[in-house]
Image (cartoon, rainbow, N blue to C red; front, side, top):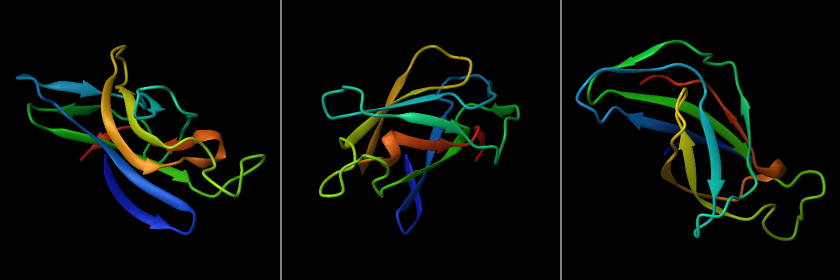
Length: 127
């Protein structure tokens, strides 16, 4: 997880994946993401699909990397509390690449994700 720019109430990061196999692989699409706390329990997550960039076939040679853009808010909305964290803090995420069923874990030490865990994510692209 590579942090990116931040703006008032908004956070951005790139989820970077690396082909660790000895052969070329491909990715196409958005994949899945579930935020978790320090004990591995799910925290509120609503992954939405952003069209920029949209899906395209990404070919990764051994050692090649791809990424997806992530955006979320840190300002409480709706019925979320305003006198503390809007949602339970997340310290990790389970990631399922497109067309796969096995998740891998990454650190997500950005704290709470407001708007009931809404994370906007692009499709994967070649980095």
